[in-house]
Length: 331
Image 1 (spheres, rainbow, N blue to C red):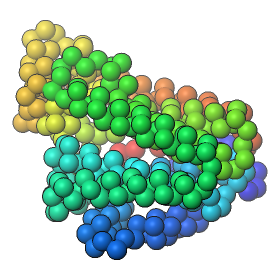
Image 2 (cartoon, rainbow, N blue to C red; image 1 turned 60 degrees about the vertical axis):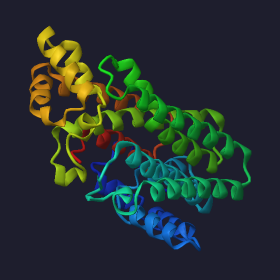
Image 3 (spheres, rainbow, N blue to C red; image 1 turned 30 degrees about the vertical axis):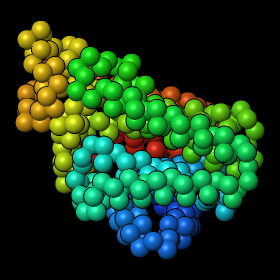
Image 4 (tube, rainbow, N blue to C red; image 1 turned 135 degrees about the vertical axis):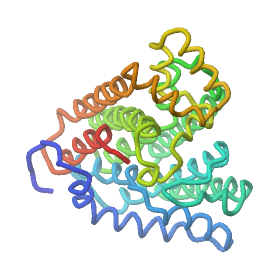
């Protein structure tokens, strides 16, 4: 890839254009490897894969690979593995959360029921391990085994925090590290690994992915209080209805006066989505969204800093652009 300045690419469209050839190959591989003799597996998997989404995680694998000077079939296979793991967690999450809408479409569990969703999630998870074994690289297995174990821990931690108004920022960050950031970090590390990067460079890409994951999830949790439901593709207030205290609400509970704090605690304990306007008023009064934006920005800055020693090239510019996008996105 030709050398170019490392100033961030200006927007998601420019980043997607740079990654378009890789993403076409990755998408084709995903669809080939989704195939099963069991019709229901094909139906459920196709439903969630075809719903679209930004394919951010597999794109990170490809861009991290190119940032380190490599691209090809192994990068595509690693990207497909990351997407299968992610999609598996989405199917399981929607069952746990009793969600009925994702990416603007009915969830798989709303159409086929919980049992089918859980089992197809298991299929995608096991398919990802088949793809890992085909690569026959112990280091790949180690990175992904560790990541998937951490993700499972994050799911259980989040379950323990449901309807718990005592969750603080540290506990929240522990959950999003495991549920979101570790898979970002695994993807960017593996992209570097597949390009033959040394351990120090792999660690830089890992650190980039981890910090980006924090920024992305904090911004995502803000959207539950700020976005347009049609643009977001899910029901606004879902986190509140599920009794999940994310950073905007955690900050508001910590900085409201005692009467408002007690009311917010009761709302979390009840999972009262009908109290959304009360919660929004408290969040606005405490400047909680500004605080979250600042925290997300700090993580995005740390992600960019992790790339500081990489050679200048368009993929590095794209990775920098994704750090900005993670904070600035509106859906």
